Length: 378
Image 1: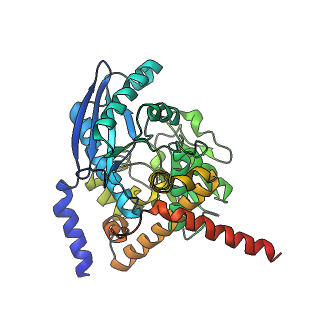
Image 2: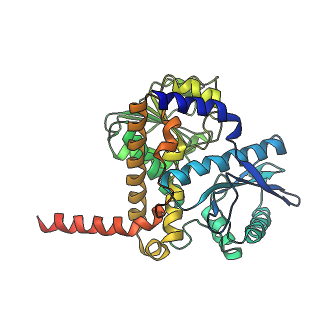
Image 3: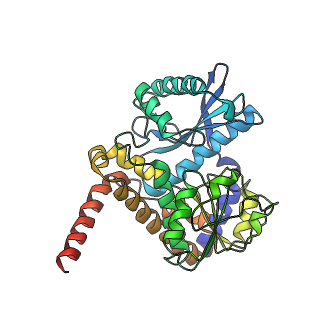
């Protein structure tokens, strides 16, 4: 109990100091401003890694705040799985609605990002995030060497990897299987649609889907509830948020028993999260949404193996890795009697361990040997 009390006290005392910081701002003339948020000082020895987010904010202060908090959130993913990177994020504060951006606008933005990355000289790598695509990253890679977005293996999709990781976390929190369970996936883009399909494929009894673009939630085997005015009131075994940050507020009292998703910072603020954790189980995105950074680690630290791997192998490695880590986190949480988010630091990979990406080759070889034994026994 002393350890549990200390963890709670540490969160309460350190909440105001847990937001990271913006270490660089760079103007994109006529389009907006870049904000590079990081959890710590970045270097070639411990480079930052986090996606490029394009969004329109109410103010520059809001954009900076989100970049800083997202950078800190990325740190949880990297430290939890020992990726060999530090937490960071690039946010582009758009001056006009993102929907109105042209292809030329995107090119101007990506050129500015390339310039910023080159100035960091290997201390920062980026990839996809909201409103940026793998095609964008392919162009950015042609302008700068500091891009991690499955460049060496274009058949592998980072969003799909994230979806597989989220699915693995959902499996863990629901006792190992989603069969017969009810779930709601909020946000059906590149990640949420993958999760929804996997839930259906693995026997979930009910999968409800919601998206602000209602047609995206029309997924085979799912029930589209995008017309619902109170999606949060659905009584489900698990809510899977795969949409915008700050989704969950005091005005969205959840009827779900568990929350596991891909959304970074799904709760509006720490107080809202703490209130929710008093009545449900929340697996933080530092564990559940780490699929893309796990794949990034393979791409960066085992590039030849990454290039030769099939997407299915990379996705399955991600699913198993996240599922195992989620199980460890839930066991710690149960043993100490505190929410999973509070024991996340205790589940972190050892600081002296080799990056998770270097483990992919051994995992793939062991999987091949097991498959060979099974085939030879029939």
